Image (cartoon, rainbow, N blue to C red; front, side, top):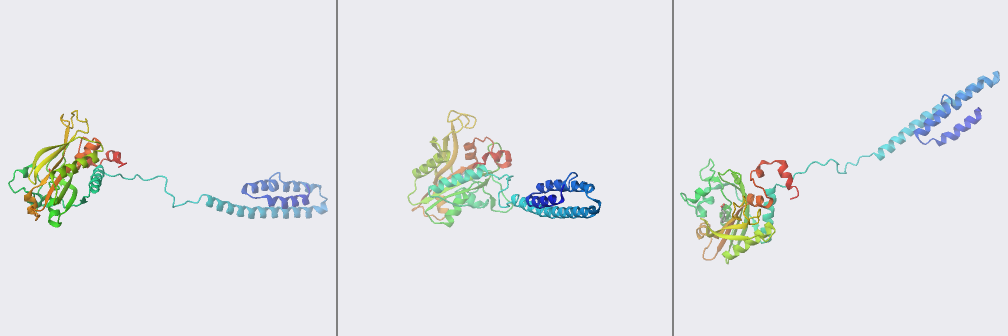
Length: 341
Ligand code: PHE
């Protein structure tokens, strides 16, 4: 092996080293056990003794040069490869993560209240609310239910530790509040929680109602029938049969209860409609003059109609749920089924 050749080879090869892998091959070629430098050392014995020392020194210099090159190149390449690695593996923190946390869903009762609200908004109603701890006179007296009136027993009441207050048994006191604070024309709905001492698979001590009230100069029973029929068709999304039965509420006269053809059995008769083919879904009527007067509305000029519905019942019918308690247990397995609402 010729020293000059190896030196030239070194100068040529060092330019070809582009990666750490190249560098390792390069090291093997020159400094490996059977590498070019070892081969040069083996040549020593063929060198005339007087030149041997000089030759040996030159090989050593070359070896050192090669070693220095390898050390420097190695550092340079490591730095470069790290930079490239960092560049290619850079984390973009603005990208959405791939393990998405489960997102909650709308409660079916909220969804139904929203839906009912949208339908009435489409008919020109606005939304009012009232407190759940209500004045006894707004809940009863001003709605033409004086003390000792048997109708108070129709709604088993939760009283609170403050005289003259109770947990409202229906949303009808919002009618009173609205008429006391606003002048006709009035066209409102009032969704909210109500409380009664009732507890079985179809009754919960707390449930939801939506109240409706329209007061204006030319309002009549036929208008009311139209509004309610229109609402029921829209809510149940089919031309559902609707029937109006005469009924009694102290705060409306005349009064009606509204039935729809059973959405479960389509009128054939089942457990849910107790074999009748009909389901009661609404109470309604023309606002009793006593109520209008109690709220300072001129009964010569104005008339009104009002209605009340049970949200839970609407939700149960719409989604085929047979136990009202499911709405209040907050079991995720139940709630998840409404994720698309
Ligand atoms: N407030 C009545 C109830 O809870 C429903 C109703 C409201 C009836 C308005 C007529 C008019 O049973």
